[in-house]
Image (cartoon, rainbow, N blue to C red):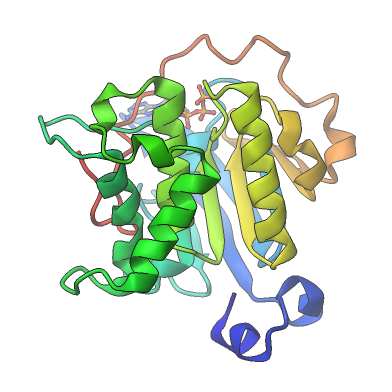
Amino acid sequence: MTSSAQATGVSERSTAAAAPVAFAMSGGQVSLDGRRVLRGVDLTITAGEVVAVLGANGSGKSTLIRALLGLIPLSGGTTELYGVPPARFRDWWRVGYVPQRLSAGGGVPATVREVVASGRIARRGRLRRARPEDRAAVARALAAVDLTDRAGDPVGFLSGGQQQRVLIARALAGEPDTFVMDEPTAGVDATSQHQLAATLTGLVEEGRTVLLVTHELGPLAPLITRSIVLRDGVVAHDGRPAEDAACHPRPGHELEQPHAYDVSGGPMNPGTVR
Ligand SMILES: Nc1ncnc2c1ncn2[C@@H]1O[C@H](COP(=O)(O)OP(=O)(O)OP(=O)(O)O)[C@@H](O)[C@H]1O
């Protein structure tokens, strides 16, 4: 929530008329290896919205959210986070990013708790010691994804689905206004998907913004207020979720193509283990 909303206890959802714009992209273009991956995207996401980005493999979903966060430079157009270009954005505590996968390479033996605690850094400052409220937020985040009993384990020992839950917990620990999640339920078992849906429901009721990339909405479906469908790097549909049936990729279509990025880190997660 914004500080004014926090001060009054009124969520941004209940003051929709005054809700700030979380993301605004105009004519956004991205080229990777000389290939135009985003080819002119216009979109505005207002605080309190719960937006699903859908589309077939390779349509540019991950590229779009990484560009919105300033993790990939635009080759054309503009993008802003809370009214500020990503390069000048400083309030990274406001954004919790869940990348597609954990990259814990480099032989760093980080524990689950350490990775989750890194989600607090933007909020508490890199050089400040963890305060009781930081430790409490980390404990709540671990409990929300049911990994409390694995907190001391090296994160590399966990399964892919469990690592995904670690990334979700890292974002939760920062208590951001806005969650940006790249396939948060990929490889995650059904129970954990329902758990995530319940957690997000509470956050959305408090007015948090959610932008997520997914192939299958699953238990998250009831939360979604808007769907954006990408096709070949342009927005093919932007509207109510119920209108998307014809645009949604076919079930089973999603696992054909490996993901190309090392997605750890980024300006909003300075403590990410690589
Ligand atoms: N680093 C890169 N260099 C060159 N091309 C890339 C790079 N990363 C992604 N691409 C290409 O850009 C296109 C869009 O990729 P992106 O990951 O954004 O798609 P996506 O819709 O998220 O796909 P998926 O559903 O498979 O995750 C793909 O064709 C991909 O191969």
